[in-house]
Length: 250
Image 1 (cartoon, rainbow, N blue to C red):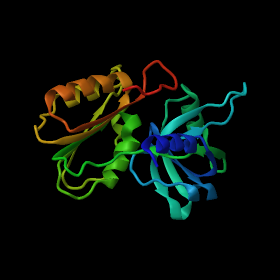
Image 2: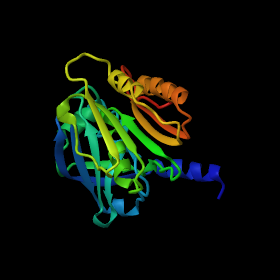
Image 3: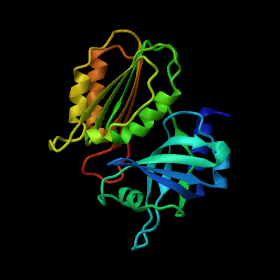
């Protein structure tokens, strides 16, 4: 099957929805809530890569409008017909955050088929995984999937507060750097940009996963390209400050 045909079919499959029921909810940190879904429909799904994502179809609003938003799959247990997704809470600022903050066990939800994902570069000499709180589920799933190969891995994460720091998988060669905006009034992504600018990068072949606020991601990517002969930068603008339902063009 031709590559273009595979992509068309993948896009068509992604538009299919699968009915699931909320099985559990857990407040991981003040600004992150994990929701577990279960249902027989999950038996038909495949999630072979870390950082795969899907669309969560939100219940219709009072005016009849129905929205959907993209979220990273944090855990998938096909044998248990169970999937876990971590949602960043922004109060009632957006329909997805408002829904995630009030969702309860027993609620019925529809999910699209998974797409995307991250492929580890076996020839990399070092790795950088960086992003803001919206990138945490993807970064965490990538760390879970990394081979124990002794390759240095640098993780840089910007979060709203130090209470939002999460325990992540450490292969023994992982260096974690967390930075919190707290009540500084700093624009999201600026502290992440400053932290990465201070990194001393090797000229050896590297791979980078970078995600978060789109303007900051673009600026960080421009900086990284100039500072090291990187083999691959996987950069994603998950959201854009001041805009709803941002479409990534990073």
